[in-house]
Length: 492
Image 1 (cartoon, rainbow, N blue to C red):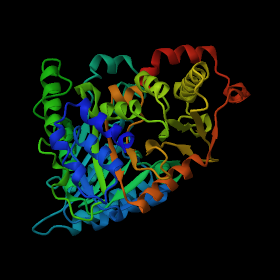
Image 2 (tube, helix red, strand yellow; image 1 turned 180 degrees about the horizontal axis):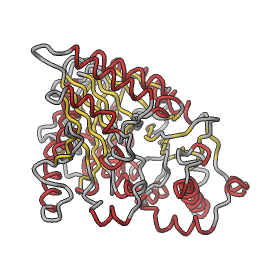
Image 3 (tube, rainbow, N blue to C red; image 1 turned 60 degrees about the vertical axis):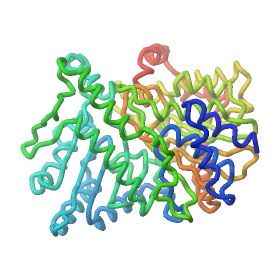
Image 4 (cartoon, one colour; image 1 turned 135 degrees about the horizontal axis):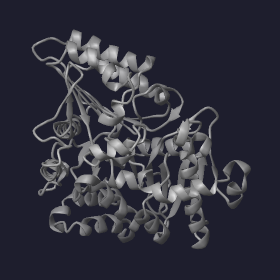
């Protein structure tokens, strides 16, 4: 029992939390497994905790189910629709979502009308003549008093950078990467964007959490804060800055401090340990949103992730997925020093979304292949290949965009926790982009079985990387590709 609690206690101690307060969590009931209590207690020192019932959570598997949930969620919403994504595509399925929004806005004109909030990345959402802005503009023109479209622009990409870096590559400097979809009190958490491939043949993760009003309120407040520090799309397609322009060189520090302070006020853990506030007696699952915004020194997700990797015990098993495999040096070092078993899943070059792209973008899969080879060589050098395996997802006609973690405590047959959200655990996720990940701890065996089925389904379409993998003709990397990767890896 002491070993099972060790991780939770380390999470508590690393943030100098009041152990007398945290001890209340361990008395939530004798039926709650101590291991789940320890994890929840540790997480509660880093962020707010939202108790829910596992019976309200569904693990989706296929992209088409994701699309159906989004469309049906819009059409059923009565009070709010909150959408956060990197961008909105311009094909038929995306137009169906926009048409659904228009239909629902026209239907909900009662005393309590539907409000719609959309947050996208400004650079990615403005690319080309037909783009996210042009898709949403007619809707905004018809419902400007009930709809707001916010376009986040990283202050790292100033006018000089825009002039030097080609339009297609300037988004590598930093992005709005949060992916959440809220329909009244039902929340969809994913790493997927809103474009046709993500609705058809681009594999991601999707978790639906129904009837979670407090968690929904938190997510809406988060999106409102980011929106207040973003440009607002106007009916004439112009952009209006908020109180502080993110690109003004005269107010750069003021903008960053305003953003940072607003986020910290929202995400700080409750001093009275708010785990049980609003908790029903049959809550068996706890959800902890973890925010990462490196440009503003908001590092909640990084702290939790580092502690999880650091304190993995012998007998623990961790399944880790990243569509764009480029772990930070900190994470790699912690995995190498860890005592648990790891299976790491990433996209094969054939399943990389950049495969076949024109121009320099077509070389991106080989940059990730170079990084994977470096990681595997380090496993060999440190004799860790029996404890840590690297695996590649390959599925004919499909690309791979999954990210997250499934965590097993020592000798457990089912996972007790998953991490799901937008982070790829790479340098840009930690330092450049705006990210949101959710730690979900559960003691519900049925939900644990669903999580196990989820990672078995994904890892079941993978093959282990070996020395022979990199000797294949299709895995040969040109020396120039390797050289360039060494210079640009922090942008991948």
